[in-house]
Image (cartoon, rainbow, N blue to C red; front, top):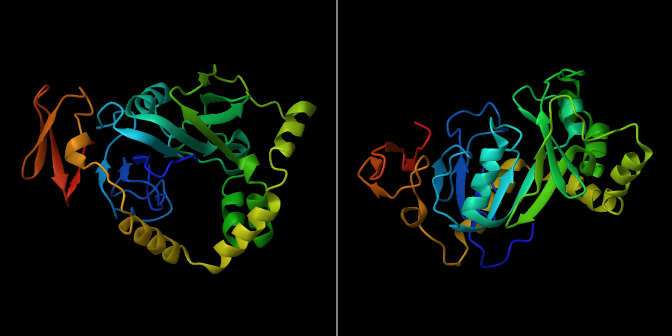
Length: 272
């Protein structure tokens, strides 16, 4: 990710493992861990909100990270429009179609591919051929874990954008990735060349450093930052009408549409 030293950064769907570089976190499910790998991390300003209805002012951020969220939403067009509205640049990451075929997450609504610089989305048929087999191998089998890491490019879509997100919604049943095509196979294989050695080192680090230690180190990095950032009262708006909101003792109030949003445990909750 090409994040500049002075960028003000939002992360959507930050979950249990937010990026150290993110200044503000946003997650739709603060208390529900079903669709993530652990308990929510709230070590910096955070709000509970749906990515399709972000409670932030236009261009409040320089950069927005949207990692493993796009495949979950009901309306990807709405989410993409919101990303473009609140930030000037950003990064999107999702499982690839290969990843979806192998792992088969039942709660993913969309299958995503990146073809010639364009995100290609179609509805997920949720037809997992392998059940939980590869989920189990990812936890228990060191050979599969090594293959997954050294061929990460096959399992992920990674897309960075500026000003506009280049995407297309495909009709149901239409495939963006033809795995019978020699050119497609060559492109997929070539995209991972030169990175295997780096990923071997990453696999070694992951195997010896507990996730708890990594999370603590990220939190320390966040607290040690000296950059000037904006506060939540400066950037929050009503997620529905984008009107101005006022802060009260235990809630937020939109003057334009008269909606109210609670503040629970110090976190603005816009999903109520």
